[in-house]
Length: 324
Image (cartoon, rainbow, N blue to C red; front, side):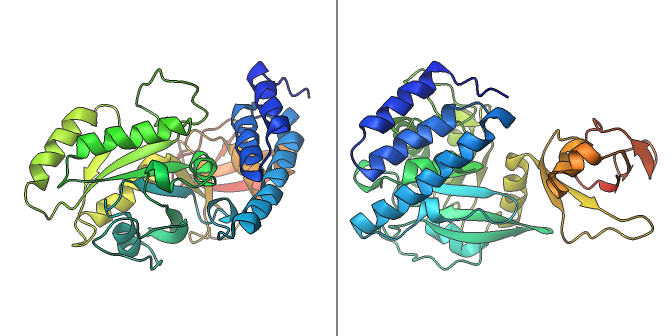
């Protein structure tokens, strides 16, 4: 299958060839990945570019003496979500409150210098949250934009005690400088390489005046994006936050079973909402999509155990029995 690469890809490839430092080369490669259409004809090229990025990341980290953060963080669990915000918004406090990680938490800004992952539990799955340095021009490392582009979603943290609408506007501007747009927020500035899903979180709900600030924030952005308020320090609304993150990711959990046996509800297949039975079969094993003859489904079928076709759209919680 031909790759059918657009003209913008070759412009990014030209930038890669003229780039001098590993960091500049990585930026160009990430642009090539973002522009490249996703289909079987580009699978080999995509893998090659990712391999180049991994090697260049090692070179850049050795050259700068920096920790291999961000790009070297392997995706774990059901999804990878980057937590972003301005200094002192409470990102690290949230990570410490809702995951198994132990980031440095303090009342002064710039306590996070590298990307740090932690796992957030939601029901029977784990979602990887990554604490990141504050979004300020002087603190944005070369590896941060590619890492944000690769994330499945962004959690944007704003401080409800300090003009959260202005904070969100500044965050959006910083992202645009990285050619990243937030899905749902309209912009006409420059070329956008990535538009990840996003959840806006107003933090420090326990402070005076935070409720009124949250009302203004939701009025300004609530029709474009999901918005909620929490207190990471007091633990307010953290259970609701876990659910909201799952909803924003727009994923489903599907379980498999062998004939005559019970399904294992502790190890679901994670799929994008709208995925079909054929997609689930391929997720179990790359050859299963072609070999699949039929399947039975419990959950979204008209009747439990009904035989369904390959194009049957699955729902969260479905149990499938694959027959080859």
